[in-house]
Image (cartoon, rainbow, N blue to C red; front, side, top):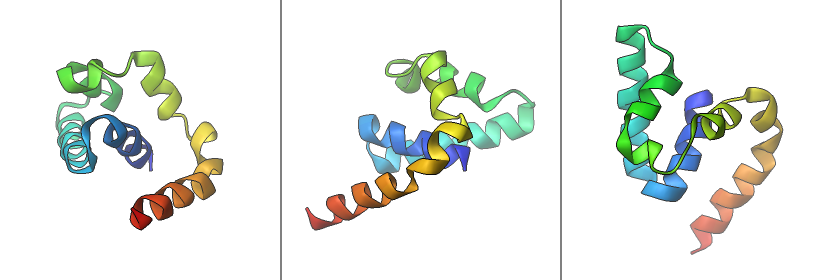
Length: 82
């Protein structure tokens, strides 16, 4: 779930497919090297260009995004109408 929140925010800056690829690669790397995902995200220049550690911590805080599902659905529906 946290990766989805990161992907949504990254997608706004880099495009959906690029965000998906980055999040997939970072999650796999974090799994294999045992480092926190946030550290691996910040090592990516294209992520660090747009997001600070504080930004990512906020994005990855489940208490701040679980109640936003209605907004996410509205955003997807609006995008699909374009």
